[in-house]
Image (cartoon, rainbow, N blue to C red; front, side, top):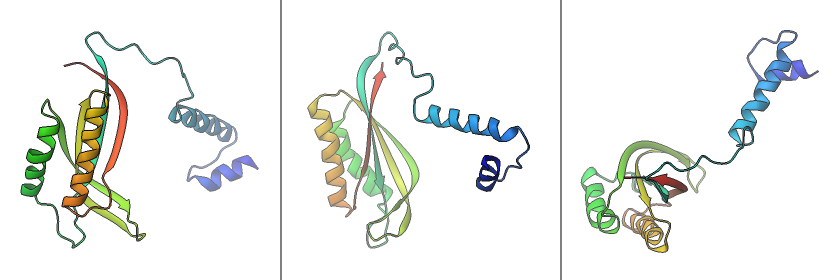
Length: 155
């Protein structure tokens, strides 16, 4: 029954009594991952912080012709496009990204992650979208991933 199914899905040896414990642990992990376990109210912001947005932009560096957006091209993009829109600051991280292209192929590529913490008003959000659009056009990209989350931050 259940123990046989669990054993077939894992490489763990199933011993009497352990299958039920693993099922409980799996259920707790699922609840925790989905935010249902211990789902009390969010903690109060720390003194000196304010409600902001955290925008993460993922810029793939492979061009359609197989070349890579060079470090010099990236620095120029940052100087000409990012700094004027976010002069108060941002962070750039190097990463390796992987995604499925529109043609179905799996593509791994060097990536730059741009992290910006900004106010929730329309102007900075429009600036984030402008960065995505300009980069796609300049470097013939299919997309620029944006992840946006509420945040509390203090400087």
